[in-house]
Image 1 (cartoon, one colour):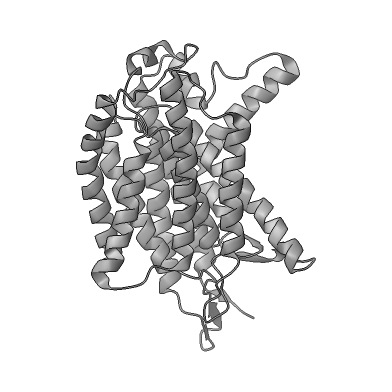
Image 2: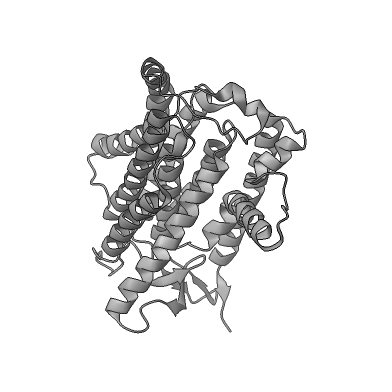
Length: 366
């Protein structure tokens, strides 16, 4: 518990103090956001706002997590080191994308193929390594079983052999990484929306990971019930990382809330999406994550629906996608949209946490 507090507090202090220093550096170098001409007209005033703020989030998260272990003289777990690898790797891809946008003054940075290749390489390396490094109980950071609240025994990707299992899991991991990173990226369209939604998501996962750590495998024969345990390899360290991400995002949100002094850019959105994907994998709650992070899912689906409808029928379902811009064009104030979307994110996170808790209740055996 002390490690969780230290990680969160340290990351928060580093983020809230370090972000304005980073803003000054970006302003001095004229690294400002390029705004699309076809976007809402209210966004024109945001042109030139410093971007790549994800650098501050990533550094604060790593330092908060690392200093908590250094202070308590404990070793980081391999599971969370791999999640950090995923976070930093995608952050580098996002940084390159942001830098090209700034240097070339256009709304497009890396070419889609180059961006996908970068995401693929990082996600595949994570997937392969996550199936190695078993602990004393034989648990590896990830599992070839697809998980909901826990691993689903009959949804094992390794049904046809270990090599095929590695390949199928790598495909599944790539899907999750692409889905979450792009989901957060699409959500990052209004001041504070993505950072606030990420805080809600990681706060929920802090509770889940801490619960997993507290549960002990045993059978209560007198009560006739079974207390379920979890197969997650390093749940307490996952909670520590969640605290670090929360602290970093809260400190960043101070400067990112409307009117934003800095944007996280693709550097931050891809990194946070990678961290979210990694957390769902190492806590064995991959499908449950789609409920808890339902806001990201809905926003991503709005883009898919818009593009699909236009290609098939030539008509648009929304005035503009992603979904938050649809409400902007309907006349909603930006702050109103952000707060209401946070409420939706909170409700969905509460629903997911409720599902997790219900599964954790003892099952009575006959």
